[in-house]
Image (cartoon, rainbow, N blue to C red; front, side, top):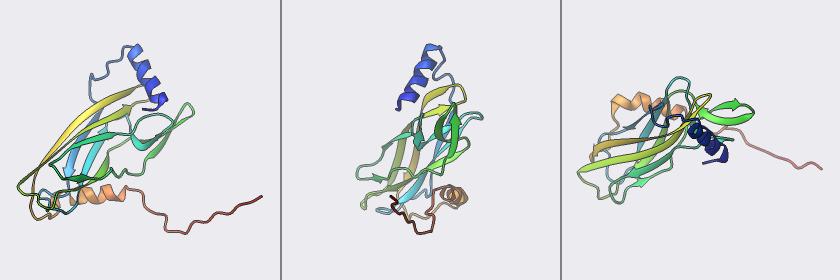
Length: 184
């Protein structure tokens, strides 16, 4: 955790602020398919929704803050990717630049079951994150689970629109050639 975030946490402790009096972020997991196919990657979205007036952090939080940390519990042989983060918003407070999310957002993770996977395919994750308001930062934790079953890998139509929006929020290449030159 960056020094500034540690100092904010320390100030909260000194002031006697309750650290876990209430969750300031709701966290859920949604799979793009209910029946992942053996050996084929599929997407899981970790959906995070800060309470009004609160925000979460991007993978590079900026001058303060902390990126969320995800610890997966999966069947043996399962591969998980690093999360893909949506484009963040900039937030400057007292000259400190941060990259945050002030509304609902989703981190997308690719999960690949083993080629020999059969039957139940339970996924779980513990997420540690920092959520802040204008005056307080609070470290929080969430646990999510997805009781999936190995199958044909067909996408779940009930969440197709959500996943389209989550992917639309991801950074995209500019589509132009870059160039640089040295002067003097």
